[in-house]
Image (cartoon, rainbow, N blue to C red; front, side):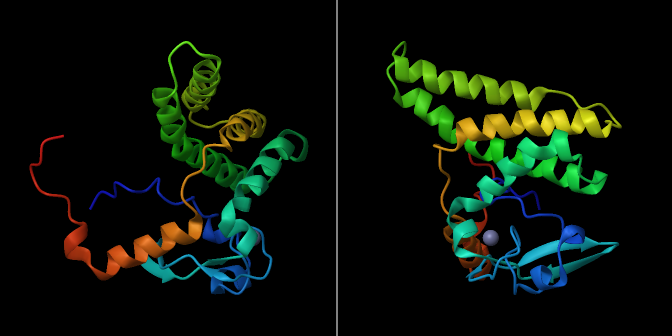
Length: 193
Ligand SMILES: [Zn+2]
């Protein structure tokens, strides 16, 4: 089944990069602080099997603070050059977060009066974010190229912070409710776009 709401929730850090306490849900999956909020069941592919796990987040990250951590890591990427698997994880999560906020910024463009200062401000942010998402990395990017892409995505994400998606906790609760009533989550077949 193709998931259409993959952008609804933030992308979690790759399981291989987490501590045991983070995987168990004792510590925040984003920052490692003491966790308080359930993020709902996650299914991860592990070799050929699918394993379910139940990550949790601290209140600050669940309230949107995970984005600050992402931006800080993006700003430091060129200086720190994290390990390749960490860098790739950072890059993918930054892309996901920029793509997740882009539609909200595009709505702001549509609801502003064309040609006004506000309209231009929103439009500039949308255009810059789209450009950053189109930047190619090549098939086998060097750590420095990936670090540069990360820091650019981090700048775009900084601009996109005012465009808030719904909170992590709310998204998790919604996903959980959908899981419990799977029949209702099916889109009507053959419905016109
Ligand atoms: Zn946290």
